[in-house]
Image: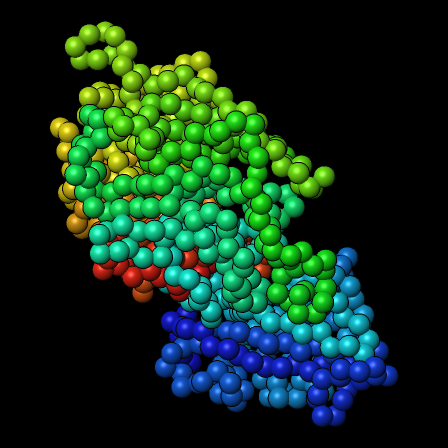
Length: 577
């Protein structure tokens, strides 16, 4: 039997016309019948080996390795109202095998595929939710089957994004779909990359990709907040990115190899169209049209280029947003900011459909004593890594040449510098976990120059009490082999307490996994070489229970290079965690 994990997607188009009276021809019943239930047409999509010789449409070819397929229907109360296991030799006659489905509203159809002789452990699973089974009518469902075991390689979904992109956002919605918005699509010969307003949505149940109405603003590297009614806030971002080294440095800063421009100063509330694919195909659910609208703010919010944004959910209805550092492009002196701002989002969408933004408050400015005197001077930050702790913001890296510190703890009434004589890093990837901020890679500022060396694979742990640990092994933590691991995607695999670092500069095609306990890199599986090169990709974790019993890591976008030679990625890869 072929290795079903070294695979690509084909469409397994089994149309199970389930006529509940046992129609001899196995055809769909589109009109009223005398049966005790209804008909169901199911199209399954399953991964197959590229060398199997199957085109994906011949049932005889595709069913070679299948022992049986189990179909289960649960009603809205979770009660099983239909269950049938169909062996391989009877898959052709499903019209006769699957009969007697009872009427059920808000039903869930669960499909499990068994291989070989093991009928206790399904190897593939999928489901469709929110269905209605009614006497005399055909219910159709397109179901994407996922392997039940964790993968050692990422595997491709059947459809691709319509717009290849990087530096985008990927937000998991309340129904398990993923909203893809904005990002850059390519970089010109001048090294400048322009943002797009394009929006798409990934339906995880069916594997279908739909293009939605565009945003009102072109934005990339922006922040999103999912709201209680299924809409999403798009916050800030930039319109441009450049990989051309700055001709003149920012005040007291080293030359930077990457820059942002055209800060987007608006907040946009975006409503994806509902319901999801299978419900829509069956005319179920309450249709909601795709729309977007500007969110009014009581005063102008100081969104800047080179600004880091952190969101902190403090209740079911309130989220705090922090803006740290950045560069005001209107400033003729080109002086980076040492300021931190905060505003609060109040989400009343579940009650009255409204969302509101509070007044903007300002935290204590970050300063430190100058080398010439004890007087406090501004200590600005560009794209620092951020974490939140007990009302304070930990901001790491992006400091100027004169700074003696690598980080600061910033609150409304106090600013405390920490990390003296430690590396001041730029463009580091970061993640917050277990009351600590972890930074992966980045470019250290050494004597006023950004160092680009093999040492840029260092991983640091910044405890939120202000102490720091550098996890330097005899070999690089990140297997960049070159330098400058930046603009990767980092996620925490909570099931196995591992950090996953996806792509990034000089590690474009690497999927790297680090044990969060001892910080040993898994040098082989699950660390592996990806089929796509991805800089500025996005990874979303779909919670366990949406499809099966495992979390699903969904990787979208990225580019092979941050210049005109780069090619943006539109393939969508998954990995079960």
